[in-house]
Image (cartoon, rainbow, N blue to C red; front, side, top):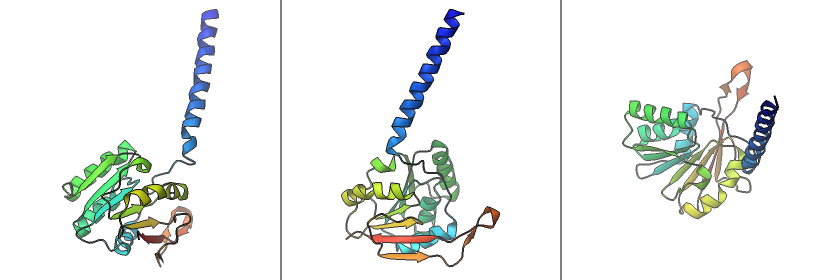
Length: 190
């Protein structure tokens, strides 16, 4: 019985240690960012507002299932890169890109967007939480060249005044009758 109690005690202590380490490791990230799919009409408006054209390279940070990357490649024939940490979403994005016939134009990277090299981007799209958008400011300043555009869905970038903001006229109808009006912000790097 003594051996069993020691094992139980060691297991409890190990569990507390892992919980503590997990909590402290997540301290750099105020909130986990959930995957919320962007409706196609919002994607089209984001790409239109960014004035995507043939020579652009679109980077979608937190690309989820790849729908923005795939749409940019389909609609504008541009190269596009998705940065995502969720392996299941990356697998779906790659599968959907192949099905859409744009695999040769797109790339999906398993990376932390906060640490990614985005220097080749001429357009960056975001549907992330405010803390993330603000945390990206040093990367935007470091990597993006004059003329690059940043387009954010719903959430702005703290302290940066957008060059343009559009609110879509038609709301998205959510479960329970909730209506969500989508807002898109655009910044041009000077």
